[in-house]
Image (cartoon, rainbow over all chains, first blue to last red; front, side, top):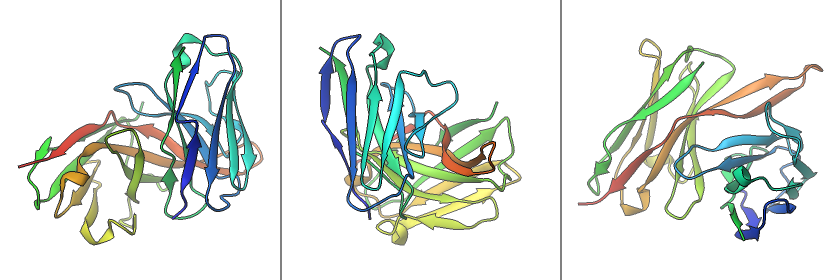
Length: 107
Length: 127
């Protein structure tokens, strides 16, 4: 089973700052990696799929990059609504797995 | 629009069977391009993929849970379900049903992702 390690566990930033979140896979998942945002009491929401493709309706400040084992989600300028937990998810190797999440909190 | 809604007991005793259902509304479960999934969120915040079922009945279970897991699809009810036997406290979690679907871009390339989630239901295993 592929382990996805997200770092950092918590990111403390101010609105307007840039957020860089990392997801590292224990084996290559090609580009079959997605990013989801989750707010308290809500289900996860798809942001990015296939490593770098923004989902419909997702603002341009969200971008994804990477392939193989190293992936990055970047939020160029944090808006108040972006403070949430972010998960990566891989379907490049079965069974599918998720990372443990990175919490982006207000500094 | 298509919506998913989980239902089932919020409290299950240790060693018993956890049973949940997911009702699909606003669309048909008999969609060949979708896999109907169960995902749980363990205390803390980690997400764990449990498995999925196709409307044809084909199932794919996480290997570590396979011996305790049964998923079923009920096309006439537009519903799918999860049964997890011999539960322990470690199975306490928020359980989500979700749809993993294929989407095709303008070049005809396929892309799979979870595009629809239920709101989740908290299940606690305790005597």
